Image (tube, rainbow, N blue to C red; front, side, top):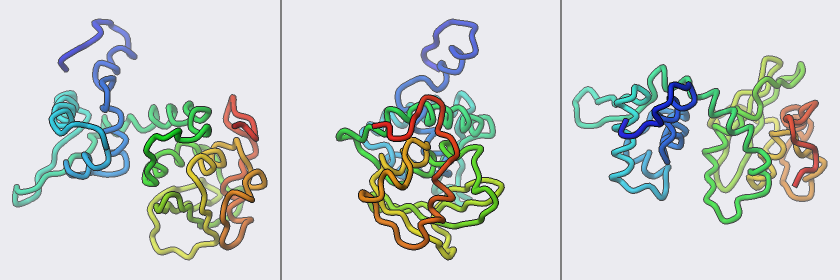
Length: 219
């Protein structure tokens, strides 16, 4: 890496690798799956092409990202290495920590529905539907994610054609507030659209307790 803190400290060494601007957002995109350069650039609006190239090169040199060539050598994709994949839990922890900032609303910032595929697993970690199995979808800003709740946990992914018990259409801050346990469906009934079995949505979203530091009804 071109810069380092010069400190023999785990946090400093980690920031030497992923602390530069855009690095963790590149990791965010790759945690959702391997991507071509153009896909990465499209998912990181605002990054210059030369800066993305530099960041990818640094992350490859550090062993976080790998570049895979197609069999004919004409195309390539970027993916996380096994070590890079271990950033999932630290990033999930940061997503949970950001909840008070997120439920205030976007304030003019860009939002993409695909980012829920990273945020929701972080917010649902360690929770289950308490003996009930349901499949619901969440539609936000033209994007849709599928939530499959089982007694073992709540899985988040792209729609796979499964029969849905319910669909929730809402704005991103409301979905994030519901997933964090800061809001209940009763708090937002007038602000969302529910198609199907509301109890299925309650099984997924209504956690017994909110995240630490977050209270129901928080702004």
